[in-house]
Image (tube, rainbow over all chains, first blue to last red; front, side, top):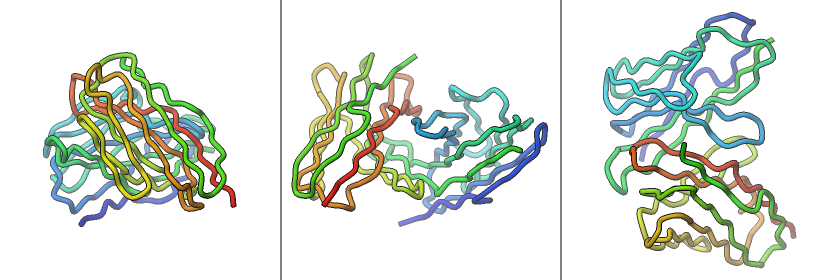
Length: 114
Length: 110
């Protein structure tokens, strides 16, 4: 088994602030993902990475940067936090092959912008 | 882009009853995954299907192997711990990227 950890659990920011969220996995998975979930809605893909130093844009990449520093970690930066923004950011990973494309999720980072 | 439509949006079940959730896709999909999210927000993978059916305890999922345009999740003998929001997510032809439905909120009552 393995685990995905996300830090911080809660993040309160100011409008215009640059905020960084971190994700670590010990599954030894190749692919990692960042999703955003707004209240009562499904998940939307922000960025994903199929290997170390790789970066692929999702449907919601505008306003975000990401970095796959090493195989086990994937960080997401909100480049300029929007006032009253409130969402949960979920990190996931998968082996990336066939049945091992199953994605496993971290517990999330809850963002609130004042 | 690819669209995933989930139904119903909400479901209330009595313990011990059976029910089904459905996802329709606006285009042919390569695979589908079903997740359950609990009240604390944790997302658990239930099934990954590239075709056919899979069963795990009281849960069973099917993915239309012919046209690959819909998937179902059946809950048998519903228990209180089955409550949560169920999401389906499908992988399109581009690969790697999952498109999520908006979820079905399931409440199982005694």
